[in-house]
Length: 524
Image 1 (spheres, one colour):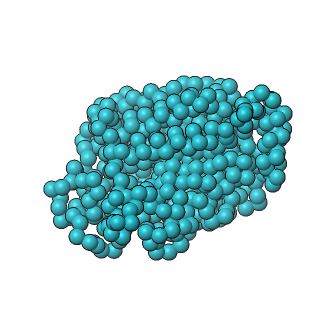
Image 2 (cartoon, helix red, strand yellow; image 1 turned 120 degrees about the horizontal axis):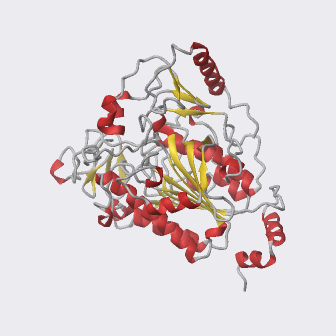
Image 3 (cartoon, helix red, strand yellow; image 1 turned 90 degrees about the vertical axis):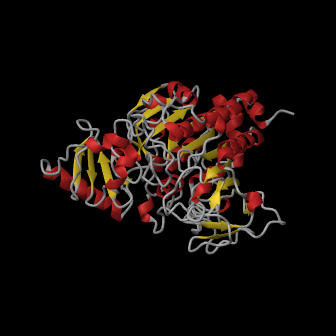
């Protein structure tokens, strides 16, 4: 019997359109619509300058370089925020995170911040007949109160549009250090003591970074000195359920295998895979076969490991003859950081590597290095190889993928998301007119070459040396007022023009305030 995919190939576009229409009674689908499988690979704390296709010399990323060389490499694509939870919220909902109370960096025991049943990206793709899966980091909260990790855990990814999920609940430096598959902790044995976590005080009698620092593979700051898992102390405390605890060194291998298994199972398509990787978030503990593979310490080695995972995904697509039927997008959730709680040598061994490339700042900051991301779109036969300077925000992926797959957006879907499908496919060099960049404590705005950062929005100046190493020490420190830069003339944001161009400063300020008060008034 022919598979659905082979049947479509033999019968042509007419059959594909009929099958699509049959699968989508609630959705308007164009007869000409070509609905590919979609693989979205989302990195963590990987900066603009961390890939060799974006200029890195001490870190080589050959698998990603192949996608960049044979796809569309964006130079002006952005996440929405310089920290993880807000960016991930915006990515899936099409709404800036500052509109949602509580959509800030979440603790490991936070409740779900995405409204169950809301029109998220995966939910809309479900309507278009896609089977949807998340593999990897979640960090959008679970449950609606105190979670009992030994019982059913919901609501979560399955309640916001995913058909299946295999997730890291929060971050790899926070308890609980277990995977959650569907609604249950994966690998939890009934013979175990119950799994308990606490962010208030130590529980159980297991070693912590405070009590047994000699057990650590590298020292941690006070915040990261809770329960020790795999010789690394974490934020918070955990006890029981040890059969389910993960091993950091195997994490990339586990996630790669899960991603490959999903693609294999859903090869008849269409499918959507959100592969949300943990690299380059702390703690950095790449598998031994990747240690020493970069020239810039463990941080660079973790990026090499990430690149290997990309290669594993592409290998599986090739095995199943799915490469030409699959849109692959790679990007990252926020800018880079060297030191973020662990003395793992990343700052000391950066060897001049600039993870933000030519841009200033990194994680936590509204400077360009905090939100300007590597972004690669690859789809053989549909996306011509090239480089695009179209202004693109990850918040636009919801509306853009809806347009690609023929979904009519509900009125309340993705209020800040705009259909930039021509830009994503490389058929237009025009993207957004402007976009918002959220820092740890304020907002920035880019419009054309102009960049505005509101007072107080510089987001943790002390972190700058951790993002750029010693190179940041030569950058002039700015004042606490509003900043205005011209990125065409000053991509490194070193020359504040706020006093020289007061009218432009006021124009940008007023525009940002209008956006803050209500979603952007732009055509979809």
